[in-house]
Image (cartoon, rainbow, N blue to C red; front, side, top):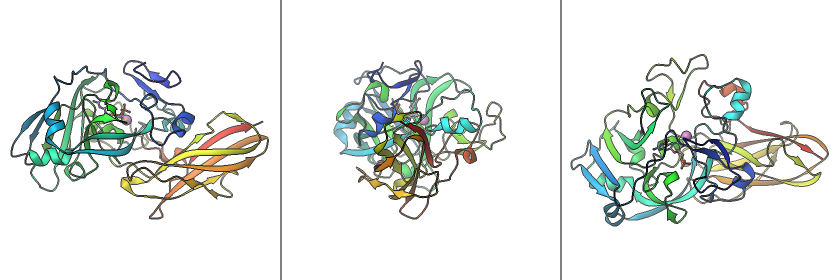
Amino acid sequence: MWGKRADVIVRTEAPFNAEPPPTLLAANEITPVEAFYARNHGLFPDIAPGQWRLDVGGLVDTPMTLTLDRLTTGFDHHTVVATLACAGNRRAELLRARPIPGKDPWEHGAISTAAWCGVRLADVLDAAGVYRRDGLHVEFLAPDIAAEARPAQAYGSSIPLEKAMSHEVLLAWQMNGQPLPRAHGGPVRAVVPGYIGARSVKWITAVTVRDHPSHNYFQEVDYRILPPDADPDTAAVGDGIPLSRLPLNCDILAPTGGDRIGAGEVVLRGWAMAGDGQGIGRVDVSIDGGHTWRQAQLHTARSKWAWSLWSLSVDVVPGPLSITARAWDDTGMTQPESPASLWNPRGYGNNAYSRVDVRVM
Ligand SMILES: Nc1nc2c(c(=O)[nH]1)N[C@H]1C(S)=C(S)[C@@H](COP(=O)(O)O)O[C@H]1N2
Ligand SMILES: [Mo]
């Protein structure tokens, strides 16, 4: 479906939500488009490249409307290798602690990495004469309607102007050297490296500079960390902490939960990524429940905005095997230990130690 491999795990067909199996994710530094996760709140708009328009307005001197031709010929092209991660990735571990009704039980695969090519949002905002004041926000809007929003509305969100003006933020029309597929926001999407995937708005048609964050449901209501005792169905506008930057995190991708593996040497694989473009300092792995830790081999990240894959060869004996991994960033920060301690009513932001239980035969 939608050009994805037959082995992706489809969570819902319409809207289309799917994640690659973890071992497939572990196999590539840059995720092939056919394996890249898909996260959607509505049905895909069908916008012909010649029909696409981008309105740039709000707190700017010269509002403008760009065609794809003007966007691709009027500004310098840049490629950024960036990992997108859904705030709901690894929710499955949270809901083992307590149920989270109505949300997809993403396991390890709501994260993927691509080489995105486009223009810098900063260059477009500069061309429009963006106001340079503190405390401004840049809102992104798309035409897909999210029926789950209250009230139902087009998808949107916003990022602080300071982030919008940084070099890594793109309006992209290519993914891994191919025209951006419709499923991933083609003709053009925003790519906001280092932020939760929700801010990388697909099928983007409006960029508006405002003196407040977007009032869109996905900025003002959803994608927030509510207190554990809050009811997400009755939460008021503005309740909870809005998510933006991704936290330090890691995961084990191979082997994966429930696998049966042979005794002897096994190579453990996974990813690690630090917050906000920070580097990973180290990844520790334990196969004895956290009594002793070994250091995984870190593979050099493709960019400051991409995950670092890691691997570690260990010897295992028959019986149950529990594998734990934790990352440290290059400032000495590490992750919280238990997913249960992070439980929140919408199941976002799980960056606890990763743990996978397998059986050695
Ligand atoms: N227009 C629009 N943009 C969107 C979404 C959406 O539903 N509509 N989903 C967001 C979320 S929650 C994520 S995690 C990423 C997923 O991007 P992908 O489907 O290309 O992996 O897109 C974001 N951009
Ligand atoms: Mo997401």
